Length: 94
Image 1 (spheres, rainbow, N blue to C red):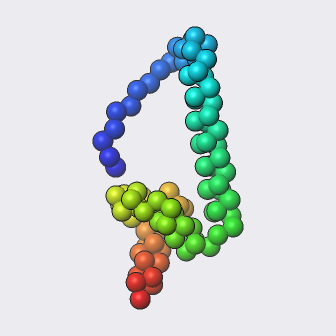
Image 2 (cartoon, rainbow, N blue to C red; image 1 turned 60 degrees about the vertical axis):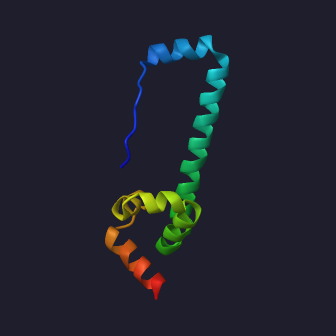
């Protein structure tokens, strides 16, 4: 999708790093909590919203991302087919 650099660390080194730097441990705990909340929110939307509502909610809350990423990837992320996303977009234009 976009160029990125990925860094990795062994579990042993991660444990040592977090024990030596408590502020870093707190930071990653908060990051994990936010990620868990986002996952739970996505699950809730998938269970409660119609497929069309899921798509519009996503594009309303993340418009810049939705414009940068190919439609088939958005469809996959939302559990929809690219054809259905095309249909939703076509109906919305009219």
